[in-house]
Length: 308
Image (cartoon, rainbow, N blue to C red; front, top):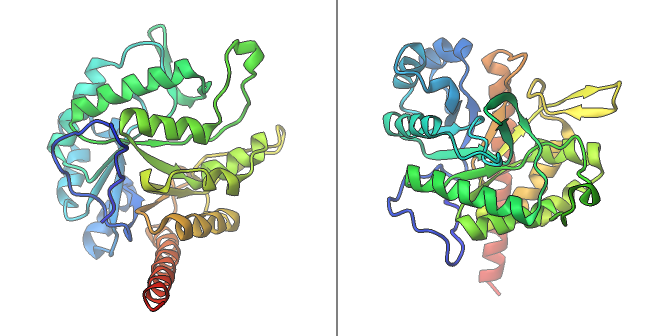
Protein backbone atom coordinates (compact mmCIF):
# COMPACT_ATOMS: atom_id res chain seq x y z
CA UNK A 1 0.00 0.00 0.00
CA UNK A 2 1.15 3.55 -0.67
CA UNK A 3 -0.14 6.56 1.19
CA UNK A 4 1.37 9.97 0.36
CA UNK A 5 3.49 11.07 3.30
CA UNK A 6 2.31 14.25 5.02
CA UNK A 7 4.87 17.00 5.31
CA UNK A 8 6.19 18.12 8.66
CA UNK A 9 3.67 20.43 10.28
CA UNK A 10 0.86 19.50 7.87
CA UNK A 11 -2.66 18.75 9.14
CA UNK A 12 -3.49 15.42 10.76
CA UNK A 13 -6.84 14.24 9.39
CA UNK A 14 -7.36 11.72 12.16
CA UNK A 15 -9.20 8.88 10.44
CA UNK A 16 -6.96 6.40 8.61
CA UNK A 17 -8.59 5.40 5.32
CA UNK A 18 -7.56 2.37 3.27
CA UNK A 19 -5.23 3.32 0.45
CA UNK A 20 -4.78 1.92 -3.03
CA UNK A 21 -2.14 -0.74 -3.47
CA UNK A 22 0.93 0.80 -5.09
CA UNK A 23 0.79 -1.89 -7.80
CA UNK A 24 -2.88 -1.22 -8.60
CA UNK A 25 -3.88 -0.26 -12.14
CA UNK A 26 -7.41 0.97 -12.78
CA UNK A 27 -9.73 2.44 -15.39
CA UNK A 28 -12.42 5.10 -15.45
CA UNK A 29 -15.87 3.56 -14.95
CA UNK A 30 -18.02 4.04 -18.06
CA UNK A 31 -21.68 3.06 -18.36
CA UNK A 32 -21.08 1.11 -21.59
CA UNK A 33 -18.64 -1.20 -19.80
CA UNK A 34 -20.69 -1.97 -16.69
CA UNK A 35 -22.44 -5.08 -17.99
CA UNK A 36 -19.16 -6.63 -19.17
CA UNK A 37 -17.41 -5.69 -15.94
CA UNK A 38 -20.18 -7.38 -13.96
CA UNK A 39 -20.06 -10.56 -16.04
CA UNK A 40 -16.30 -10.96 -16.50
CA UNK A 41 -14.99 -9.35 -13.28
CA UNK A 42 -11.53 -8.53 -14.73
CA UNK A 43 -8.59 -8.21 -12.34
CA UNK A 44 -8.56 -4.42 -12.03
CA UNK A 45 -6.86 -2.61 -9.17
CA UNK A 46 -9.57 0.05 -8.89
CA UNK A 47 -12.26 2.04 -10.68
CA UNK A 48 -12.36 5.83 -10.94
CA UNK A 49 -15.48 7.98 -11.18
CA UNK A 50 -15.97 11.69 -11.73
CA UNK A 51 -17.64 12.94 -8.57
CA UNK A 52 -20.08 15.26 -10.32
CA UNK A 53 -21.68 12.35 -12.21
CA UNK A 54 -22.69 10.70 -8.91
CA UNK A 55 -24.07 13.59 -6.87
CA UNK A 56 -27.72 12.74 -7.47
CA UNK A 57 -29.75 11.03 -4.76
CA UNK A 58 -30.18 7.72 -6.56
CA UNK A 59 -30.69 5.98 -9.87
CA UNK A 60 -28.47 4.01 -12.21
CA UNK A 61 -25.14 5.66 -11.30
CA UNK A 62 -25.35 4.54 -7.67
CA UNK A 63 -26.69 1.13 -8.66
CA UNK A 64 -23.57 0.68 -10.83
CA UNK A 65 -21.28 1.42 -7.90
CA UNK A 66 -23.23 -0.92 -5.62
CA UNK A 67 -22.92 -3.71 -8.19
CA UNK A 68 -19.16 -3.21 -8.52
CA UNK A 69 -18.33 -2.46 -4.90
CA UNK A 70 -15.70 -5.23 -4.78
CA UNK A 71 -13.38 -2.87 -6.68
CA UNK A 72 -11.59 -0.13 -4.73
CA UNK A 73 -12.94 3.28 -5.73
CA UNK A 74 -11.15 6.50 -6.64
CA UNK A 75 -13.33 9.65 -6.66
CA UNK A 76 -12.01 12.34 -9.00
CA UNK A 77 -13.55 15.81 -8.78
CA UNK A 78 -13.64 18.18 -11.75
CA UNK A 79 -15.93 21.00 -10.62
CA UNK A 80 -14.94 22.29 -7.19
CA UNK A 81 -12.89 25.15 -8.66
CA UNK A 82 -10.18 25.25 -6.00
CA UNK A 83 -8.43 28.22 -7.63
CA UNK A 84 -11.53 30.40 -8.02
CA UNK A 85 -11.77 33.79 -6.30
CA UNK A 86 -15.15 32.84 -4.89
CA UNK A 87 -15.52 30.66 -1.77
CA UNK A 88 -16.00 26.95 -2.32
CA UNK A 89 -19.59 26.12 -3.22
CA UNK A 90 -21.11 24.84 0.03
CA UNK A 91 -23.73 22.73 -1.76
CA UNK A 92 -21.15 21.09 -4.01
CA UNK A 93 -18.92 20.42 -1.01
CA UNK A 94 -21.79 18.85 0.94
CA UNK A 95 -22.71 16.63 -2.01
CA UNK A 96 -19.12 15.47 -2.34
CA UNK A 97 -19.02 14.60 1.35
CA UNK A 98 -22.28 12.66 1.03
CA UNK A 99 -20.90 10.77 -1.97
CA UNK A 100 -17.75 9.82 -0.05
CA UNK A 101 -19.86 8.60 2.87
CA UNK A 102 -22.19 6.60 0.62
CA UNK A 103 -19.42 5.00 -1.47
CA UNK A 104 -16.24 5.18 0.66
CA UNK A 105 -13.28 5.72 -1.67
CA UNK A 106 -9.66 4.74 -1.26
CA UNK A 107 -8.62 7.97 -3.01
CA UNK A 108 -10.12 11.45 -3.53
CA UNK A 109 -8.63 13.94 -5.96
CA UNK A 110 -9.27 17.34 -7.55
CA UNK A 111 -7.61 19.67 -10.06
CA UNK A 112 -5.36 22.68 -9.78
CA UNK A 113 -7.79 24.81 -11.78
CA UNK A 114 -10.78 27.13 -11.61
CA UNK A 115 -14.17 26.72 -13.25
CA UNK A 116 -16.35 29.53 -11.89
CA UNK A 117 -16.35 33.33 -11.66
CA UNK A 118 -18.92 35.94 -10.59
CA UNK A 119 -21.69 33.38 -10.25
CA UNK A 120 -21.00 31.75 -13.62
CA UNK A 121 -19.80 28.15 -13.99
CA UNK A 122 -17.72 27.13 -17.00
CA UNK A 123 -17.67 23.48 -18.00
CA UNK A 124 -13.89 23.39 -18.25
CA UNK A 125 -10.71 23.32 -16.18
CA UNK A 126 -9.25 26.80 -16.65
CA UNK A 127 -5.59 27.82 -16.15
CA UNK A 128 -4.14 29.21 -12.96
CA UNK A 129 -1.42 31.90 -12.61
CA UNK A 130 1.03 30.39 -10.14
CA UNK A 131 1.67 33.28 -7.75
CA UNK A 132 2.07 33.55 -3.98
CA UNK A 133 -1.48 34.88 -3.76
CA UNK A 134 -2.79 31.89 -5.72
CA UNK A 135 -0.80 29.51 -3.51
CA UNK A 136 -2.49 30.99 -0.43
CA UNK A 137 -5.95 30.80 -2.03
CA UNK A 138 -5.64 27.21 -3.25
CA UNK A 139 -4.09 26.12 0.06
CA UNK A 140 -6.95 27.64 2.05
CA UNK A 141 -9.59 26.08 -0.20
CA UNK A 142 -7.83 22.75 -0.17
CA UNK A 143 -7.59 22.71 3.62
CA UNK A 144 -11.31 23.49 3.80
CA UNK A 145 -12.00 20.58 1.45
CA UNK A 146 -9.80 18.19 3.42
CA UNK A 147 -11.28 19.32 6.74
CA UNK A 148 -14.79 18.75 5.38
CA UNK A 149 -13.98 15.26 4.13
CA UNK A 150 -11.70 14.44 7.06
CA UNK A 151 -9.06 13.04 4.74
CA UNK A 152 -6.16 13.91 2.49
CA UNK A 153 -6.97 14.95 -1.09
CA UNK A 154 -4.69 14.53 -4.11
CA UNK A 155 -4.19 17.47 -6.48
CA UNK A 156 -3.68 16.89 -10.21
CA UNK A 157 -1.36 18.93 -12.39
CA UNK A 158 -3.22 20.43 -15.39
CA UNK A 159 -2.37 20.42 -19.09
CA UNK A 160 -1.15 23.83 -20.28
CA UNK A 161 -2.01 25.66 -23.49
CA UNK A 162 -0.58 29.11 -22.70
CA UNK A 163 1.98 30.89 -20.56
CA UNK A 164 1.11 33.70 -18.16
CA UNK A 165 3.14 36.92 -18.38
CA UNK A 166 4.44 38.04 -14.97
CA UNK A 167 4.64 41.64 -16.19
CA UNK A 168 0.96 41.68 -17.13
CA UNK A 169 0.02 40.03 -13.85
CA UNK A 170 2.20 42.35 -11.81
CA UNK A 171 3.33 39.40 -9.71
CA UNK A 172 6.21 36.95 -9.71
CA UNK A 173 5.35 33.52 -11.09
CA UNK A 174 6.35 30.35 -9.23
CA UNK A 175 7.61 27.35 -11.27
CA UNK A 176 4.85 24.75 -11.33
CA UNK A 177 6.76 21.98 -9.57
CA UNK A 178 7.80 24.43 -6.83
CA UNK A 179 4.17 25.54 -6.51
CA UNK A 180 2.99 21.94 -6.12
CA UNK A 181 5.72 21.19 -3.59
CA UNK A 182 4.80 24.23 -1.51
CA UNK A 183 1.12 23.31 -1.77
CA UNK A 184 1.92 19.89 -0.30
CA UNK A 185 3.94 21.46 2.51
CA UNK A 186 1.32 24.07 3.29
CA UNK A 187 -1.89 22.04 3.09
CA UNK A 188 -0.85 18.43 3.69
CA UNK A 189 -2.36 17.36 0.35
CA UNK A 190 -0.92 14.67 -1.88
CA UNK A 191 -0.25 14.80 -5.60
CA UNK A 192 -1.88 13.07 -8.54
CA UNK A 193 0.61 13.30 -11.39
CA UNK A 194 -0.88 13.14 -14.88
CA UNK A 195 2.06 12.18 -17.09
CA UNK A 196 0.14 12.89 -20.30
CA UNK A 197 -0.56 16.42 -19.05
CA UNK A 198 3.18 16.90 -18.52
CA UNK A 199 3.87 15.71 -22.08
CA UNK A 200 1.12 17.91 -23.55
CA UNK A 201 2.40 20.92 -21.62
CA UNK A 202 5.97 20.23 -22.74
CA UNK A 203 4.88 20.43 -26.37
CA UNK A 204 2.61 23.44 -25.92
CA UNK A 205 4.69 25.75 -23.72
CA UNK A 206 8.20 24.38 -24.08
CA UNK A 207 9.03 22.75 -20.75
CA UNK A 208 11.32 19.74 -20.31
CA UNK A 209 9.00 16.87 -19.27
CA UNK A 210 11.75 14.71 -17.77
CA UNK A 211 13.11 17.62 -15.71
CA UNK A 212 9.56 18.51 -14.60
CA UNK A 213 8.96 14.98 -13.31
CA UNK A 214 12.41 14.90 -11.70
CA UNK A 215 11.43 17.97 -9.64
CA UNK A 216 8.32 16.37 -8.14
CA UNK A 217 8.64 15.16 -4.51
CA UNK A 218 8.10 11.43 -4.87
CA UNK A 219 6.88 10.95 -1.29
CA UNK A 220 3.83 13.12 -2.05
CA UNK A 221 2.66 11.22 -5.14
CA UNK A 222 -0.40 9.13 -4.35
CA UNK A 223 -1.59 8.29 -7.85
CA UNK A 224 -0.58 8.59 -11.51
CA UNK A 225 -2.79 9.17 -14.55
CA UNK A 226 -1.99 8.02 -18.08
CA UNK A 227 -4.04 9.07 -21.09
CA UNK A 228 -3.96 9.78 -24.78
CA UNK A 229 -4.27 13.15 -26.48
CA UNK A 230 -5.26 14.76 -29.76
CA UNK A 231 -3.75 17.50 -31.90
CA UNK A 232 -5.04 20.87 -33.06
CA UNK A 233 -3.10 21.16 -36.31
CA UNK A 234 -4.31 24.72 -36.90
CA UNK A 235 -2.89 26.00 -33.61
CA UNK A 236 -0.04 23.49 -33.36
CA UNK A 237 -1.22 22.36 -29.93
CA UNK A 238 -1.63 18.98 -28.31
CA UNK A 239 -5.02 18.62 -26.61
CA UNK A 240 -5.57 16.54 -23.49
CA UNK A 241 -8.77 14.93 -24.75
CA UNK A 242 -8.47 11.45 -23.18
CA UNK A 243 -9.54 10.02 -26.52
CA UNK A 244 -6.65 7.83 -27.70
CA UNK A 245 -4.18 5.21 -26.50
CA UNK A 246 -1.27 6.33 -24.33
CA UNK A 247 1.55 7.33 -26.70
CA UNK A 248 5.01 5.77 -26.57
CA UNK A 249 6.62 8.98 -25.29
CA UNK A 250 4.25 9.08 -22.31
CA UNK A 251 4.90 5.41 -21.57
CA UNK A 252 8.64 6.18 -21.52
CA UNK A 253 8.18 9.15 -19.17
CA UNK A 254 6.01 7.00 -16.91
CA UNK A 255 8.59 4.21 -16.80
CA UNK A 256 11.36 6.64 -15.84
CA UNK A 257 9.14 8.34 -13.25
CA UNK A 258 8.14 5.18 -11.38
CA UNK A 259 11.72 3.93 -11.60
CA UNK A 260 12.68 7.01 -9.57
CA UNK A 261 9.80 7.22 -7.08
CA UNK A 262 8.69 3.58 -7.01
CA UNK A 263 5.40 2.00 -8.09
CA UNK A 264 2.25 4.06 -7.64
CA UNK A 265 -1.46 3.35 -8.27
CA UNK A 266 -2.00 4.12 -11.95
CA UNK A 267 -5.15 4.99 -13.87
CA UNK A 268 -5.75 4.63 -17.60
CA UNK A 269 -8.01 7.57 -18.53
CA UNK A 270 -10.18 7.34 -21.65
CA UNK A 271 -13.17 9.69 -21.58
CA UNK A 272 -13.93 10.49 -25.24
CA UNK A 273 -14.32 8.07 -28.15
CA UNK A 274 -14.37 5.36 -25.48
CA UNK A 275 -13.28 2.00 -26.93
CA UNK A 276 -14.23 -1.55 -26.04
CA UNK A 277 -13.28 -2.72 -22.56
CA UNK A 278 -10.65 -5.07 -23.98
CA UNK A 279 -8.75 -2.08 -25.39
CA UNK A 280 -8.61 -0.45 -21.97
CA UNK A 281 -7.54 -3.73 -20.39
CA UNK A 282 -4.70 -3.91 -22.92
CA UNK A 283 -3.49 -0.53 -21.68
CA UNK A 284 -3.74 -1.64 -18.05
CA UNK A 285 -1.69 -4.74 -18.87
CA UNK A 286 1.11 -2.56 -20.25
CA UNK A 287 1.07 -0.34 -17.16
CA UNK A 288 1.06 -3.40 -14.90
CA UNK A 289 4.10 -4.82 -16.70
CA UNK A 290 6.04 -1.59 -16.12
CA UNK A 291 5.06 -1.55 -12.44
CA UNK A 292 6.24 -5.15 -12.01
CA UNK A 293 9.49 -4.36 -13.83
CA UNK A 294 10.06 -1.42 -11.50
CA UNK A 295 9.33 -3.57 -8.45
CA UNK A 296 11.78 -6.23 -9.66
CA UNK A 297 14.49 -3.60 -10.19
CA UNK A 298 13.87 -2.25 -6.69
CA UNK A 299 14.21 -5.72 -5.18
CA UNK A 300 17.40 -6.34 -7.15
CA UNK A 301 18.92 -3.04 -6.01
CA UNK A 302 17.85 -3.73 -2.44
CA UNK A 303 19.45 -7.18 -2.54
CA UNK A 304 22.69 -5.80 -3.95
CA UNK A 305 22.84 -3.09 -1.30
CA UNK A 306 22.07 -5.60 1.44
CA UNK A 307 24.87 -7.88 0.26
CA UNK A 308 27.52 -5.19 0.40
